[in-house]
Image (cartoon, rainbow, N blue to C red; front, top):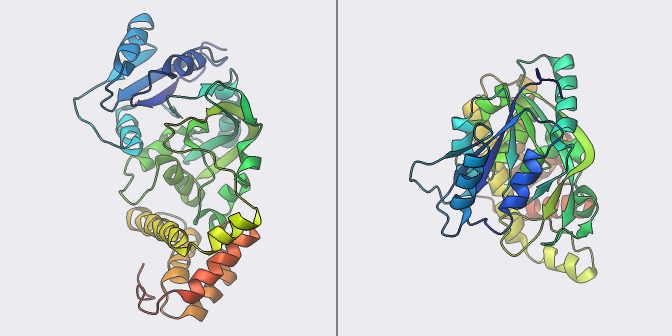
Length: 330
């Protein structure tokens, strides 16, 4: 690696992670792309996490920095957000405390980032993200590709009408540039997680590149905040999803709230086509007329992925109560 390679800051958010933390930090420090620095912030751990962070900060002075102000956010999204505000790098990655990064993760992502910069320039908000290998607590493979396991279509990052109702970016695989970071620092309460928010920002106001390689061993264990769940496509699984509309409506409400927040914060500067599509998405869920809700959804091609999910979406929109939020809101 050239000594002139740009330095990348790795934002590591921790909470009671002593069991797997050493493996994660070691896998970052052993990357083939060596121009990197770890910024860690613990969110009130009661185990040995802080001691481990302090040990690495002492052993790798200048490469591992630990922040602390005595406050507890109580949520990984907020912990990542304060790390984002503390960072000064031109490029940033996000690290969970319990995964293992394969040696070429950062190098492979940086190659794609440089290609993006050649096409779009360095001032545009840019995102690179990758696939993952799903493993158990002992790093034994559960599934060779999380995208295949969860039926994720990463190309949705290029189609806002397909992205607005779901997320395809897994934060621990993401590499972003400073312009995207500066946009993401104003992450609102309505954003479910930091990775979903940066994905929406890149889709509406920047550009993204997809790396089909699996660059992270995505560890599944009893303490995961977010995990990889394989869709249950058996007949009982399908019947169960059909019979539980409340969960689908709650997810729809979260995606609408995020779209509304995105318009509130950036609607005046994002491309008009993106703003118009977000407003149409809000109309497709909030019109008091069920036929208009369905027609708008079909016209713009809003999709949740699988044919079954799309069918259930239309079913829910048809049965939504008539006293929903007025059509002209948002």
